[in-house]
Amino acid sequence: HQVLRVVPKSDEELQKVQELQGLEHLQLDFWLAPRGLGFPVDIRVPFSSLQPVKAHLEASGVSYSIMIEDVQALVDEEQTQMLRSSRQLPLTTNTFNYKAYHTLDEIYNFMDLLVAENPNLVSKLEIGRSTENRPLYVLKFSTGGTNRPAVWIDTGIHSREWVTQASGVWFAKKIVQDHTNNEGVASILETMDIFLEIVTNPDGFAFTHTKNRMWRKTRSKHSGSICVGVDPNRNWDAGFGEAGASSNPCTETYHGPYANSEPEVKSIVDFVKSHGNIKAFISIHSYSQLLLYPYGYTETPAADQQELHEVSAKAVAALSSLYGTKYTYGSIITTIYKASGSTIDWTYNQGIKYSFTFELRDTGFYGFLLPAKQIVPTAEETWLGLKVIMEHARDNLY
Amino acid sequence: RAMELPTSHFPAARAAAVALGYLRYLRGGPGRGLDLRELRRARRQDVDDVGHKYYLELELEDVLDKDRTVNCTAEVLYHLGSKSRAPDVQVTVQGELRSTEEADQEFYHRIRSLEKELVAENIPDSHGNVPPALQPIHLLAGVASGYLIWQNSTENTKFHLARVKHVKQVKRSDEDLQFDYVVLLHEMVSQEVIPWEVTVLWHPQRGARVSRDQRQPGHTLG
Image (cartoon, rainbow over all chains, first blue to last red; front, side):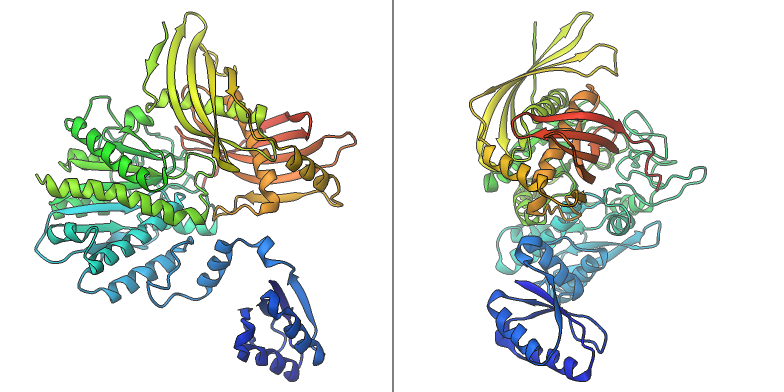
């Protein structure tokens, strides 16, 4: 494939280029469609159409340049899909590209499509606003009832962990598909609701797209510092401010001026407390391939340590069964490091027994920059682990 | 006298990362990246007045040929008290690593015959893409990072190469290839992403050598 550029300089030239648009058998892909005189037209031309297209242009004296000699060599398949899908919003969740990373607008658009397509199953809740006043959206999946026992899943609390938001989008679609086909989580939805917050830190996420791909924290500015952002996974009221977080605003694990200072955190706290019936809470991060349970802020084992350990073993086995991906599991403090003010320590202390954190692929070779082609395999295997936890919660309600 | 350690706990995992860094430096190249498939066993011995010594059994995989794994044993000694002294590492690889002679020659001649010095940045890109032509450059950054990880690790850190921020080839009058990198290292415990300048010399027969490195000052404030 080559990409040709034509800049039409007369009406005749413009017409010749527009003629090409009508010739469907050539399978041309207009990266930049004809707009008018002087505006570049970029056309990706499959190998078999190169000769007729060039002949058509040359016959009318229309000059063109070869912008990209060999598209295959230069551009990954995912990159092409990304470019294409980013220029036109998909019209349905069936044409949405799950194999690519998306912007905040694209993910928020996806949510609206999903709700519109499945109004009896999915609704969108706004649980608060971020520091920069972006809405914080949670998708609710419910087949009815009133305040049923529920599962909470969040992705993207750390904005640079892109495979997590991308997996969250896949999970949302998967829940709908399972329900439609009456398989998988359909049985869980008979008695429980699922809440899914896909972009838990939208300000940070927008920043990773525009300014700094490695941004982790929120984007709050607290008085007394030129540095921006609080680590939303050190801002919860469980061992807040103790060893395992930083009091320096210029660091990545800064806990913030006080617990729940971050609206991204406070909104979840308020939601969980007012709901009152959440039975499983799973917060998703990357990378390291770990399944973790409380505690992070203390060496004292959680009262339910043995059960959580057994559930973890089952979840990890299910996850590995798909592609052989190896996971390690255990408490936060023994497996990864001491961390204070972390999400699942708070949720566990609130009485949500099945509180887990996943650290998704990989183990460090790509790290935060996981290739887009690993999004779907990661989401698929993780989903198997999540189902084990959800099914255990359903079968062991408390 | 050596205590058995759970391989799922972080002390063993951190020591394994040091061993991997060292091994990448020694045996990696533009045609070979090594990654940890599994930490099989770990033991620790506290040596009086010296430091903490870890004994590890690792299964490694070839990033370019995932079906191929190789076992190795490693010893990592973190020196007591001194934060500026690199851990001592010894590794023994059991079996053969896939030969990269052909790919190395091809890469060497390709770079030597470039008219303009190679310059690139942000490898991988935000979507995790590495253009095929830049894959050897990415793997060579892994070699250089392996050196940095080995030299700068303590029992309280765990480093990975997050990204190549910038790379510039420098033409030399001798037979080595020279690449001046700025790499971003991600440190797991602090979660900081640290820019680090590192110069790598490489030759198909002689392998890689870090000739200079400097941690960059400053921190992204926002």
